[in-house]
Image (cartoon, rainbow, N blue to C red):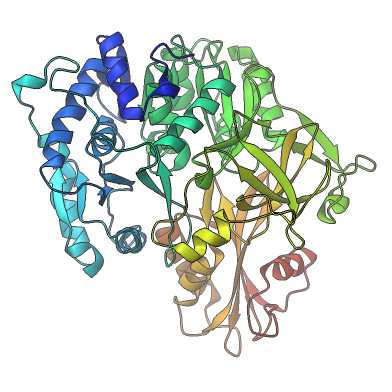
Length: 573
């Protein structure tokens, strides 16, 4: 267990204080920028920055009030996040506003959270304020550059100005984790200090973290995995972490593996697409990429694919990568992060099943034509039930149903949304037991291990990002008035072992005179607004998109017709 008995502390900020006192001069975080030298901070240095910022933030009178954190990737976000927790402010991790792209979603988060202020860096503050001023929802925010705050002399020693944490009780909300969902209806998951400690403990246990661990994360700090695993877990378990900008990885995937080799990283990971990208684009050069230190290569946030694991392991075996290092896991923001995972070094379990039987809710090995990767077992005090969502009865092993979760990692609900909270977090089984968290995901258990098979809802997941289909449909329909309103369907299909986006749109009467220009405009709007590139766009006749009797789009039916080639297509890109 961590030497400061982290689980017994009242908050992660108390754990940070203990780290600074135990190992003041040890490296806490390192940030590797796209260009230039890495920036590093020790435990004592981090605690000093957090203390200084917290004192200044307390003076703003924002205790128990949501505040947006709009920092780019880097150590400034780490300092600001912990300072908010120390000052009893409800942190809302977000992203620097960029005109047209992320602005509407950020405005929705600001309105939903009721944020009174925004924190960012001095470099960003003027640009961010100017960008945000174009929207009423963001115009009234107070802006604050956290890296301009200088500290008084009395906080030089760890613990030098009284206890660091004004962070309230364990049951108080530490931060709001906005689900990567709909721009019109973002929901802020209320994660308490107790939730964060409980989930951090399950991660430490499963990953086998100790003082000799060295982690690396390029995941966005405003996503649950990037925040809880990348920025909280190193503090909880007391080991150094290296952070990278997500764009560094996306532009040059080799930089991730090079950093693992350079810093002798033991723990790092990401969504399935990251491994796929490396297997396709990175040359396995043992002289440059020594991956022998990499003990835990976690894989989560989107479906884990057996083919990807096989391809990556085979390609990088000559660089010292071991297949047993793979650590598939399952989780969601509503459970802080992690629900289930294996034990360090066990490697992935792959199950061959019949796809058609699985779609009918049956797990059958006979006539197997697809492979599923297990997501390990629930860890710590987390419990999982597979439930028939119609009857609310728990199902036995190898029966497909909705995944329900219980335990101390389950968040307390959605911020200011009592109805949605009751619906998602207040589920009860037919026998009256509960409350349970309804995940909306489908899966089954086999000998205690969780296998995730799909989603009850129509959420589109591309490259680890959840995108609501109605948002994609709305964006596409608004491109041109020849496209019928409420006549679009967005869904994902599997192509080259990856989920890819398909859009089907009804046109008013006939095919447009210049479909190529229309396709280009639709694609541009989708990429610009949602940062997802469609693999196919189809224009169909009026009423060509399947709908219910009340006019709701039947996305699953449309997907099936697309795959079977039965849509009334006028033009296709």
